[in-house]
Amino acid sequence: MFGFKRKYKDFINPKEEIKETPSGSFKDIISGSVLSKDVVVHNLPFILFIAVLLIYYISNRYQSERVYRDMVSLEKELKDLRFESITTASDLMYMSKQSEVVKRVEKEGLDLIESTKPPVKIYLEK
Image (tube, rainbow, N blue to C red; front, side, top):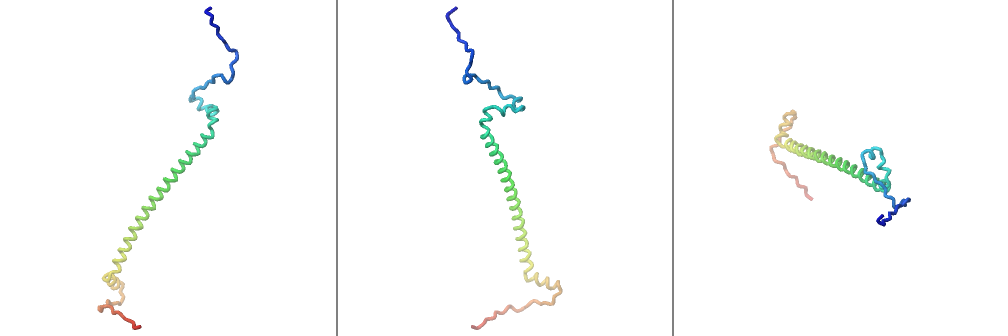
């Protein structure tokens, strides 16, 4: 009619064929057909690498939290032991005072008497 000639191809080369890429639906994910696609299979080593990194990251986080909890508990224990040490040293200093020693000697009923003379220094001749 107008002189236009339409060309129709009876055979399409596989390289020229337009491949249909259906959108990833929920049904595809549940059935597992998403994992059989060429893109996923081609990138499988990278996906596995990312999965290993995620597992390492999670385990590292748990380990660091455990170390932190241990550190906090050790700091608390150190603080308690420091207070106990100070208290014990204070009690010992109180018990070793001369007046407290005299009271304990009298309480125990020992026949010791307090010296009224000051101590004498002894010098050795060389």
